[in-house]
View 1 (cartoon, protein in one colour):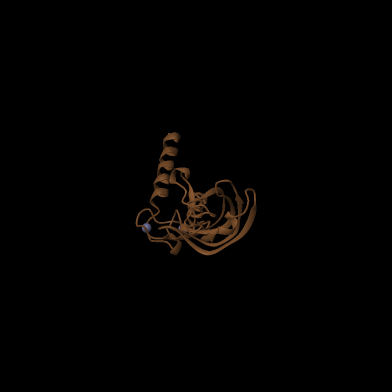
View 2: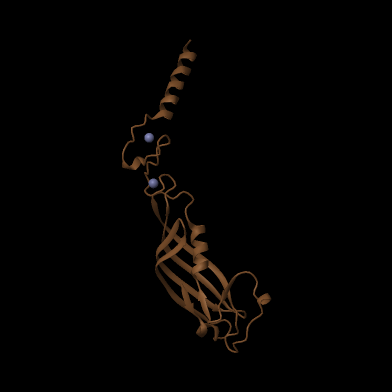
Length: 175
Ligand SMILES: [Zn+2]
Ligand SMILES: [Zn+2]
């Protein structure tokens, strides 16, 4: 999500502008992507660059923690990051790298790329155990079949064992 910010950088320190964000899809990593991102980016001119405050909603498509199918979770992305230009927006003079500590930069074309911070913050907002649906039945621990597609035919081993054990204990207590 690349935004041309030469206008914003030419404003005096303290000036603010607001930009609508809208993105159909954004690749996050091998297991996840974002879709239907909507929100705003407020840009405040600082003495070093632009302080960007993002507030957005999106749908994160990840992997169900029970059955490994696709799982969609609505998420909110909110962050504030300062972006420092690598060149002076007025003189075009390069700013030496040690003036830019770790963090985000505005490139030599005065383009600010929100893709990377959106990616990082979206992954942080992902639910720890996403589900494809609230009642996902998961995979059979014995044969690995997806139980959402119906019973696999394996005996419900764990439950039976516990049942037998409970019965045994009852017998002992009774004697
Ligand atoms: Zn699932
Ligand atoms: Zn099975």
